Image (tube, rainbow, N blue to C red; front, side):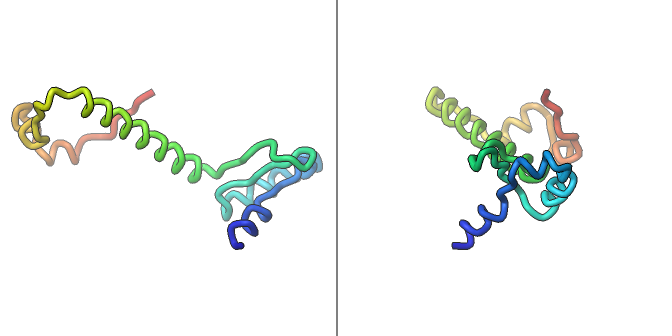
Length: 106
């Protein structure tokens, strides 16, 4: 039952936005990860906190990477090389990897 109660607490009628209460609604995202906006008593939109959006985006990215890894494994010829052997071959140390900045992909 706690799940149903949390859903009920996350409902926000769109009329609250029309009454100038948007700031108060957005402040709720400091304590709640998502809010469901109702229009004519039907869910019309979901507002996510930045942290929840980032968490869900990361899950999606990891899932897509998992799918890609599965495709590559299925298509592989069976010849593989370990990470440590590849790093030796390329002359990369573990310390260099740890010191490297995260790539920005746009």
